[in-house]
Length: 451
Image 1: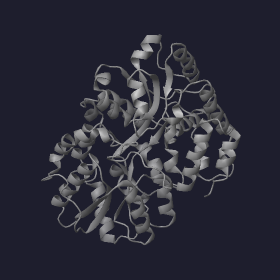
Image 2: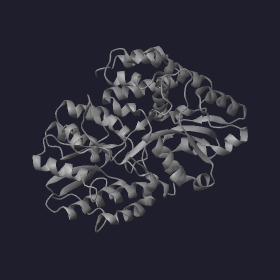
Image 3: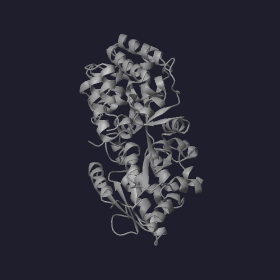
């Protein structure tokens, strides 16, 4: 099973369904790129090609961008075709295996990109970025981690980041006289405070499994530092049994046993947004979730957000832990690679598209459209643009966190191979249900290394 992608334009799972209503605004912002109409690129012919995900608002943003590019570059056109997420994963895998991939290959970086690089299917862009530092520096530095394989860069990060943050209900915090925790001990104390007040401390959509994974991503980091997961990603034998990993696994089960999560979390799904509803209906005080949730809550409970009841904070530090509290987790960006099987002319067109600041992949109007739709754009130096957004407080918090992060750990189910990712989600389910011990979890996952 392929690891799920984050964020997916037009999907509810780590996606932006609630932005559908904002699509006209996002599209209107593209007028500065010179497009004559929405989605004008379509399929059709082009000297170079791209496959992209369907779903609004990003499909329209990309379509308008390609239409503007083609109008400004009639001798270097790009044809774009759209596919639903699952269909795209299947089609791109087959096409790459047959040496028939589009010129520009869309991916989420991590394990999938590493497999492309190992097979010689994507171009090494390291030297090109070295010769074009302005292009490389046009996006936040932390986003390159998931684009890098064995020290070489195989993709251009772009579009948006999906950052995992803590949300909290300010009204419930005021009710018990609490402040957002800055240490894990304070978070543990808050669990008891809210339980005593008859309020569920933390909302969790445990049935979805990947939501539970977020807790491990941060606890592994805060306790052992990013090196713990890096060893896992590198395929180091026994890496899951690292003493700090075992501490993080035990801390997770301790939180479950302490009643940190709402009763019945195992049957709650993220696709239904039921976990979000628990927060804005005052049923739960906190929730660890992706940055895309902000727009979902804003759409479903606008008065809750406009009334100042939604707050957010960074995952707290663990006392004695090795990880920097500025480290973050999630999906750093979306990634565009260039097919190594494309002709030299096609590869040159793709590089020109990456580098062009007037009508290219990250022209100002594209950046404006992402921000207008409430997404955390990864372009560098856009603080002034964010400051003018109606969501400036939240977007500014997320953008600064990404910009200042010493480490941005990619969501594990993206970073690992598909077979490892499925085993991971299965074992996470058992860990949170207390049906296996931390040691058993580690042993089960150690057995997947290299697969």
